[in-house]
Length: 460
Ligand SMILES: Cc1ncc(COP(=O)(O)O)c(C=O)c1O
Image 1 (tube, rainbow, N blue to C red):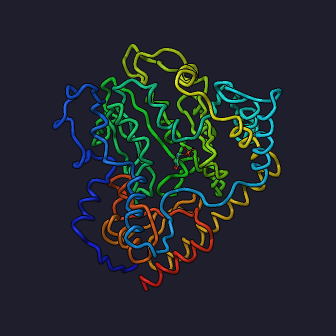
Image 2 (image 1 turned 120 degrees about the vertical axis):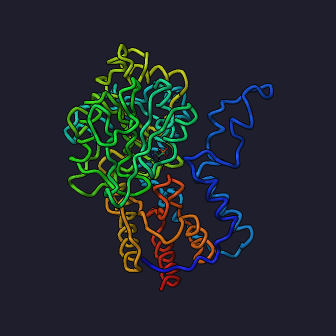
Image 3 (image 1 turned 30 degrees about the horizontal axis):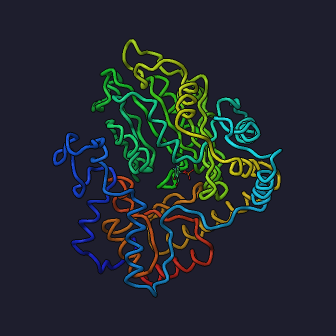
């Protein structure tokens, strides 16, 4: 492990760190104990008062802004928030121009689109992302969205309130916060060096583990969020490791919400691009996709969610053990019902832009950008390992999970002040993230290399 000095071990940093742990109730905000929902004219959902003070990335942005205000000359490089830096590829730009011109003419103008998304995009998704991999998904199982954040955050609305939610620790904060807003109990599955960052399925009491987890057969359903390639650790599950989870979900009548936002970064043969590569997954899993990191759509906004028709909502309501409580009907129909009430679709322009990445030129251009970012990841892995850091991820994902000395917020402060480099403190993703920071490979090459040079000069 590299040595680094942490000149800013201040009390303030410690207090802020505590506030920023996104999965524990904040001691800064009002809690349900200090404010009841009887107060005021407009009662608020008390579950919101259990959330941490701010969404992790907003808090980081505020800290960086404050530092910049005090040090306007500082040339800050961000390897923190997972936004991309490379422009949209030419095929996408061309499609956007063409779609814009269509909007200028009455005959080709488009208003509200079909609620599940335009056929041209859903057909392209089915052909290229699924059938090309031997997976049989139909176009009416695909729901085009404005990105995976909305859908991973909103899908829990279909669940009954008493369903237990299992998430990995560390975790993409949206899964936790959206379920906390709904007042659900959350169970954490630690992903650590010891288990190779592979979450262990919770043992149910009837499975006779020595320490049966709280997930006994008490009639409450279970929904598991899995994100692979993983944000924040950059690690993956092999086909065999994912099969364990699919089998577990089928045996225990659990649902898996599988976030495949980083699927396009997979390089290894034995890492699945979709959970539907695993037999039986259509009976137990919803899958979320995003074009944000695949094709630089963080500002364009487009993604999609696959809800197989085989996914039945209430297989054992009588026993009370369905994750969906009393709702009847297929999940596909329910999600359609939810979306048509609360969502008016992503723009025609965004959908034409997304379609363009499936053309031969689009595919090639998108691949070139992914290769560029993955070369950043390789350079970062090599350099940081050479400096003595323990580095995980970065092989099939654009994220590197780097072990640091001391707390991850202290390291964040030290990097910002000493190297003017922004990282994301691992503890912001959950308590098992303490002692790590997340770096992204989404920077441009020069800035990434410059950031590495700065860190190296400090740890030498
Ligand atoms: C794991 C994961 N899921 C979903 C998203 C959200 O993606 P989108 O931009 O499509 O909303 C992100 C974005 O960083 C992410 O890391």
